[in-house]
Length: 364
Image (cartoon, rainbow, N blue to C red; front, top):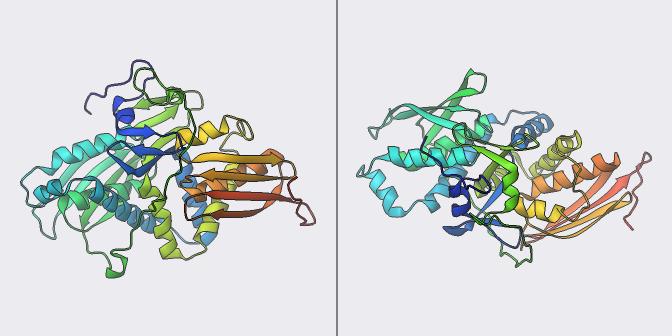
């Protein structure tokens, strides 16, 4: 692992605050390409969320998650890595290994876990393969998809991925040449909404310029993890490829997928993973903005119901389930949900409590 420079004041890697910008409208973008949105969210939510989706639909999702993340990461890196670099890689005029070292370092700083190259064959034929291990992955199937998508760019061919557990917290990931079904090609799309201006003023670190709230988290680059200093919860900094995974799963599983994701998230949140601290408080807007989830414009919440409106919404299905789960946990009651995401990225959520007789109570 290369030496990682940390900000002496807030302890955040300089790479994180140099390569990402927290805007005043609840959005995090890459400094090199403002079209690429990012989010800083609890990584421990990921596997339980997809586990809940699996339970609700009654079928395993591992293969679909690997395939969806592979396609999303490949499309993401395809737009991020300069065309001349990809051409030089394809013609083998530059070595792919230093590029992979950089990708592995980025993954570690983003909290994805620690990848290590084990072995490979790169002769540009059907027998090529690459093997890596990953320790403490944020999600094993998504980590396999991350690796496959990256190596499709580095090797210039289509790959499949498999994974197996070597010991607790340590997995072996293998990518090998494999053609993908024609019907899956050319479908991946990233949603870009016109961003609205905002007036959020996050307190900044005087040294690196990142949000001061990031000082409440600790980076461990040698392990590839980020932990809350007080909560101990694991965080990841991820991007538009995660949002694209949901769109890909909807293509595979049908139009009921959004409500299934929301329900899985609601159940997970209501079970107590998230704290109810901040629900209805002024700092909830800053919390959402620091995570890159959008600009909270309106929140009315009491025992009679909730109305929530956020501009520049991102990972909206997760947000809907989060809000519903937090409200139901707060008041220990079931709710009827209505939500809408507009074409310009404004998310509205309405919740009405459902009593024992199934009657709704409208918010005042």
